[in-house]
Image (cartoon, rainbow, N blue to C red):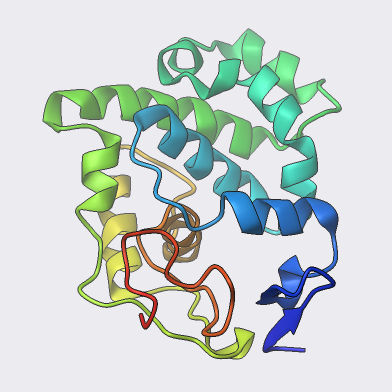
Length: 199
């Protein structure tokens, strides 16, 4: 099942968003819509890093706990976290207890704060928007990285970020509307306002 699936509501979605109610709601109301604020982008970047090696639905189910654990993803608050906070989070069963990823979130909060003097995280991330966006008809045609995600990954690393490989960064770009990888035929294709329906 690689093409779109028409749900009971008559709307076409990719197979990954067609069954689980949490994924369907995320797909219908959030995924691929533009996120241009610092906190919103820091949250999405953090969650994408935690998702590495796990299913996205696992992260979505834990999202309220992640928000509680990381002060609503306020970069200033997370940037002030200490080793004691890392240990506290390692004991929190509501989140993914991965020390490297927890430390990366703190590191990335500090890098986010540091970027403010140079235009900020949102301006940097959105500056890597490509000239065109993919127009996949099946899930197999959806790329997992791009020249822009490779370049943005390199730039973020140069700015002190970690857990920002090209695949993670491409997933971020999809999630916040920088590229539109909604399948052609999906009811969400072209709804971001960033890209035309035709792609």
